[in-house]
Length: 301
Image (tube, rainbow, N blue to C red; front, side, top):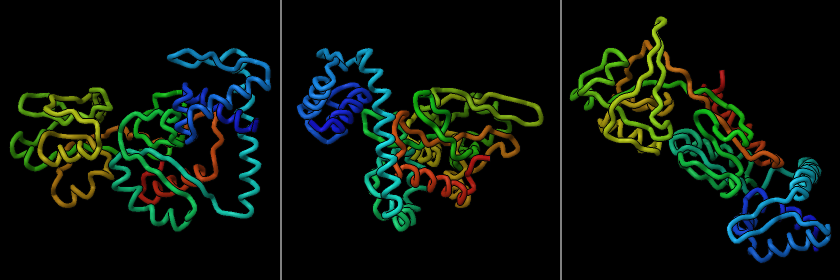
């Protein structure tokens, strides 16, 4: 057997939690993955995995072996990467998942420059606000606003997104212009609820006054582009990163509210799985994203 292939298959089964998912991410059959792991166990003369009809668990010996193997594979990748660095540009497939507004407004318009700089990197981008299983979905990294709740991921804070409160003129004509953030809680006013916050209130400050603002809502939605569209349609006030609102404010489609109040910036992170070698194409992509944030004056302050 090819022991390296067996090691890679074993590592992927551990990380994916099943032979089926491991096979999908490796783009081989489940039978191939099963045979590779069985041959590896036979050569080592130890049981690495306990298999049931529903799940795969790592044995004590398998867990210890996994920790050693991931370091070995990372070192091998590093050796190959250093050799390739001297002779070629970064290359290969990179799978990334980013919020849909970030993709539409910032990332995709700038990709011609990225492609010109790194023509041998092939990108597969998921544009969504859904929770992504990086291992199970075989995603190399995600870009997400807010705190990274999964403490098992490696997260790099790449920007601070300045936030504001906005409403469409049609909404203000119907509900009136609120003078104080607390007005949004009163009858006659409403907000558009962004579901990823799970109803958590926004904290706003002014001259020592600190208020937590939420409000009644007609619509809760979990996609950034649809959330923005709901605000433009007059369905309620909404909290937006300024990069999403600027063009609509300039056109008169949105009106800024409470401009003398401060809202804590939203952190923006790149996150990727731990115990994975950060391949060269991922390193240059992250560095380029940081450059992009600086160009739009969104870098971490």
